[in-house]
Length: 433
Ligand SMILES: [Fe+2]
Image 1: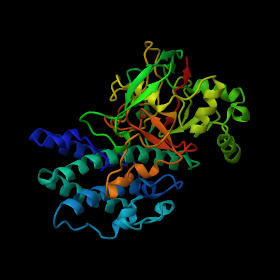
Image 2 (image 1 turned 135 degrees about the horizontal axis):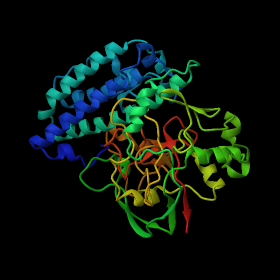
Image 3 (image 1 turned 180 degrees about the horizontal axis):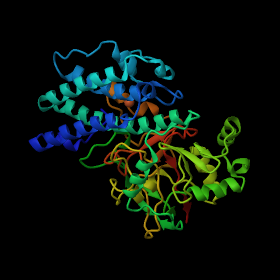
Image 4 (image 1 turned 30 degrees about the vertical axis):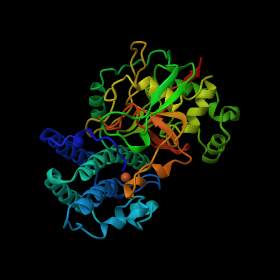
């Protein structure tokens, strides 16, 4: 099972059940809000194999609850439509064959409306069943909530990628909504402030999840790690600093790049972060001017590493990052609170502490996504959630502006392949002392 500690359902009292029920309803509601401006066509198209249609995200998260909670733990439950599991199973081999991922955009049926009817059916069944569900099933509801939050972020980035392919440059939400979003960020400022070096912890530190709140299995078990003298940058790299890298020929200097990264730059003709074009960048509100003070985003691991080399620094390890974040509030910063055109904003010229560790942009680390000492995947289908992806990917930390608030934590490990950059990915520099 992908979670060891589930704060909400572990306490079987009325308050805990009400909290779980409320969080389930709010999470399911937010997913619908995220597609509120989309047509059936918008929600059905797929722009690349890595991305999925918005409609598919709504359906797949529903399949997760129907399969692992209702089918497996509610005696007598009958599937809403026995054909749907083939369409909306993502990668669970234990659940049998499935529709090919690159062809999800060909699923013009069922319609968005039909998917919403299915969602309502499953929501009602879960809400009705929850109070009497065994503890194992309640834990799966908690897992399903966190799973849906991950898909909410993917839905936003996938829709952004889809709309970016359209020469009309359509907005998912109009710019006025961006102004509202920025206004809600108290730390927002026209000035990123100078980057400072913040000395990190040294010696033995405890890494990995411990405690009573939910965590994915890849954050377990806790273990001891040794940190050598190092420092982390006070904030992520800004767009303005990235422009200096471009102006200095960063994308045309092979000595800055890992061999695989240089091959990627050459092969894909890369010369800027994704969505950049002539001083503008594509956002969920269409094409907008690039804010030089805002954190750079939509960069690959290869780009992050090359920039760090150019800057005379390096990427942090995930252990350095987690040790620095452990004392910070994971619900702080610019994260997703409601449907809208999220986009990273500047840190502001604040104090000397670490800024924007949580939210704004996911931060590439130099650490491979591999199991912690003593890691064990859960038995059964949900054991496929994390462990089988621990090959060839790198860890990102801290969440982004598209991460639902309350989803991330210091021990949270996101992971992507080194060339991928359609998520809100950025970089914070580190150096040895
Ligand atoms: Fe999924």
